[in-house]
Image 1 (cartoon, rainbow, N blue to C red):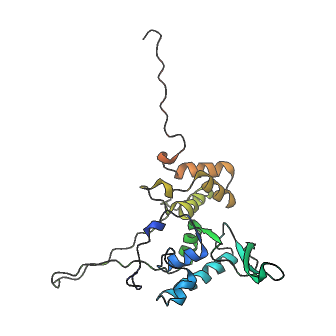
Image 2 (image 1 turned 180 degrees about the vertical axis):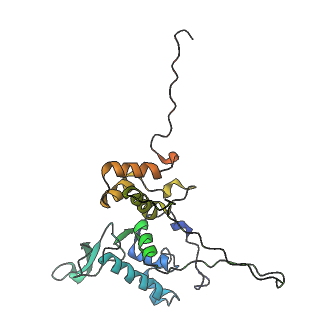
Image 3 (image 1 turned 180 degrees about the horizontal axis):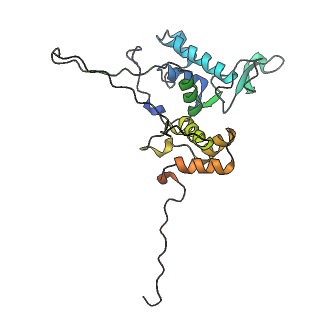
Length: 234
């Protein structure tokens, strides 16, 4: 990287649905995990290495407190009588505080990470918007900056129900990163139903919410043409 203060293009990570703690922390600090590890950004004196390590600690705390549910959770051990005292890892419970988490092997989902970032208002590094300099000083007041688009709740006109709460939750946790131009970014039916069942939805409710939120082009089987009955001899 020619200028470490600049945030690189990270769009090649857009379709990744799962990250290690290390990858997530680096991305939140605007550093490409393909270029550096957490140890390397610190030893190299990267200007945002403290942000990356701070995000790693924050993610670990969120896992310990149940705010982020890891897909894989592994702890770091050091061999004594065997393995020549070298580092090794093995699965642990997220609440096990006896050993540190293996940041490069503990895996979290994009949805759970974004849910935590949004709920806790965690600041992350973003590419600054480039503004072209004006040809001359304007004679009128400058225009107000455009608001940043965000996911708004559906307009239920003050009405609510358990089903609508499941819809909002599924949109926020699973569909907020869906790109219509890239079907691979859509959560699978199994992911949606499993998430809703974990939140307390019944089987029929989970199926219904998944059906309502899933675009027709992503439903299994697609639209089938109905056969038109014909008279014999015609």
